[in-house]
Image (tube, rainbow, N blue to C red; front, side):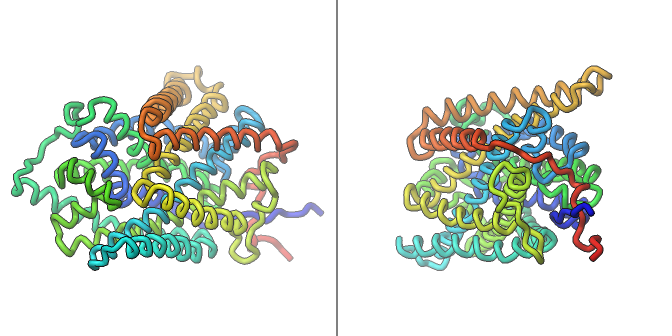
Length: 482
């Protein structure tokens, strides 16, 4: 009798649940709170334009994810698609790149919560250096402990918790942006559309490209939807819909939000705030809400919890898939007997989050740690997107010349995505960052390159892979007859 394989819990998520994970990963609050500062400092009032360009560069890749999820749903996402399109070695290397993308994004979260805890202590008038160090360390521990308690209990608990955090942060973000748009003209800052033109960039075109690094990070995350394909109802239909839905909803929200925030402060003052180790957004909120600005800190904390949940889910599913396919240790494919989550993969992720956040903090301080990990994650995201777009060209090559629609959908769009990804990696990373300072420039380029080479070495150490596993091969626990 053929042995039935036990896999991730299937038929758990619907369209709302899958899209929720995508929007939470994109995170309206953390994009505004965490990324507004770096983009505004680089490009001034043209920060909204940087996000518009980032969206244009992201849409082709979102289309590629939707197409591949429709025909090849798998928790391995980009890694499995690269394997199908090109071969085992490229698929394995892509798998490591995707893992690094989600894992480095996960490390951002305890760093961010440490920052917000420090701001919270400042709001309570605890301003000593020791208080900030204690606040950062406490933030890191709490950010790892509570999401771990939720994520280890299964995908359903993870999704519902993430949705609750998302709703709370969205309400506060809307209120803050609305307040700025109403009060800014009365404070001598009239509303205008300069933010959507090149002349609004204080650093010119180079400044706009520097801002795009962070704006691209803002749009990185919709792809996490693809990693829960094996846990979603009617995955071939709902995963593509959820991918596009979460990106469109988020983009509409974030571009207007960034535009509103540009009227909340001036670049020179916000630079001083950032260099002091605080989030610029908290200073803006304080100038408009006074003591009520503590709500921004609380929603930042809420958003960070949500992000920690979904990035842990994404990273663990990728590592699970790699272990299942023989691309790394089989230990990572082991599931918890009760909750059926890849718990040993989660062990690695949460331990790495603790180590990575603390090393960065003691090396360069709180705010620079956030910028460092955010920029690093964006690099691996761009490389991941490059392989996804290429996989569409290969796997759907027969459809490209069948019709004009096929040429546009399966040919022109992924080619545009490839060109955009390559251009951004070269221009924003290997040129702009390399010409920057050591702490938040050259060191990132070196670290990313070393990680990519290490992943390549690990790839060629794999001697044999098992065939790719489709979601239909996994039998839900409750359908197995004993």
